[in-house]
Image: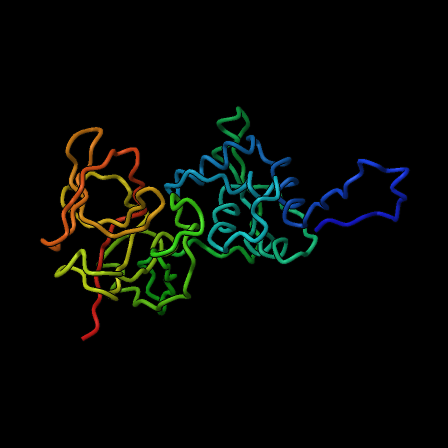
Length: 270
């Protein structure tokens, strides 16, 4: 929020503009990075590898582009910086909180420092696997039909709430953590009869490597989200297939196709 420290006459401050005040979240991230053994780019790259995206969420917070990051984004930042998630969420809510000394044993070894452990905050929630069996697991639901950004990041798509899944059922489908899964709905008839309008699909964003032919994937093509069957033609070309025989497929440049994740389950109302 931009604030002015006082009232000035224009004759004294012809080119003066109010400076943007550092938010509690920006302050927290800056302090956490100052205590971390690696530069900011290192941790943004870690998040990119984990999420399969090209965004730089920590940098976006620092420069004020991301004012209200999602809980999932805050969780990733907390993990890579070795910070309690409750402190990240408190800072995002506007509270002035300070970071703890980061738990980054691997980073300290890479930096030539001895690895050591720090006492974790009792409020740090453990990473929850989809195979945990202690009650229903909330999986977020996302609207793939509308991208708020360029469509090359799952965070570009609006969330529509959560849907509860049985953990034993999820264990059969995937070993990926629950935060790497999301639910979307089919839109249109291009994938009939495999997928009809309003079918529910479960998408695993941990599976983004196109290493299986003729599987169904959630993808973004030039910013448009869609669910299609993919077939690799060569290193530079992918065949995007619609199961509906009345909808022709298309060959696209691999570099234009962003894979959000693989469809691992389809649910249908009867």
